[in-house]
Length: 334
Image 1 (tube, helix red, strand yellow):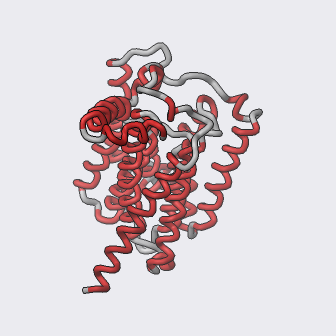
Image 2: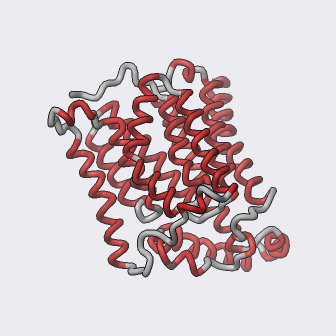
Image 3: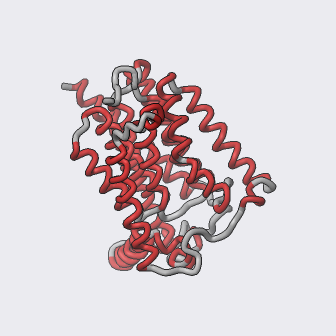
C-alpha cells in the first residue's frame, strides 16, 4: 500500500509539480527579450488581425481569463494587487495561467503516451522519466517566445498522437472519431492541427501498397483531412482578413540572420538527435512523418521565423515519442 502511494506521489511530483515549477521560472524568473508580453495591459490588436484572427480559442480565452482575473484581484486579492502588478500585467498573468494549465495537461498526456507501448529500455520507470524530462525541458525552453496559443496547440497535438497510437493498436472506431474531433477543435487553436494528419499518415500509409493501388486507410485519412479543412475554410469565410494565409515572407531573412540560423540549427540538431534515439522502425516512421509534414516545413521556411523554435516543437516531440514507442510487434493490417 505504501509502495503504491509512493509511486502515485512520485508520479504527481514528476508529471505535474516539477514541470509547473520549471514553467513558472520561465515566465517569472527571467523576461523574454523577444515579445514584450509582460508589459501589455490587454490582448494586442494584432491577435485579432491577419492570420492570428483565426486562432479563435486562444484569443477569446485570453480575453475571458484576463477579465475574470481582473475581477478576482479587485475583489478578493486587492491586498496583493501591487505585488502582482510589479511582476507583470494582469494580461500577462492570465497568459501564464492559460499556458501553464495546458502545459500540465500536455505533461499528463505525454506521460500516457510514453507508457502506452514503450521500448524495452523505457520499461524502466527511471529511464522513461528521463525521456519525459527531456520533452518537458524542450517545451519550457522555447517559451522565450511566449504566445497565447502554442501550449494549447501542443496539448491538442499530443492528445491527437495518443489517440492515433491507440487506433494503431486496437482499431477502435471511437479512437478515430476522437482523433477527428481533436483535429477539428485544434484547428480553431492553430494551423499546426494538420500535423496530426501527417502523424496518422506516417503510421498507416504504405507507399508500396499505394503503388499497387491498394488504398487501405485512405478513407480514414480523408476523414481527418475533412476534419481539418472544414473549420480551416470556415474560419476564413467567417473572419475575412487582408492576409488570410501568412503575415509576411521571411525566406531570405531565415537564411541571413544569425538568430534564425541558430533556430534552424536547433531544429535540425534536435530532430537528428531524436532520429538517433529511434530504432529502425521508429526511424522509418519518422522519415515518413517528415515527408508528410513537408508542407508545414515549407510554410515555416517561407513565412515563419526559425528563431521562433517553438515551430519545431511538434516535430521534435514526435521524434521523441517515436523513439519511445515499440513498433516491433505491432503491424498495420494489410
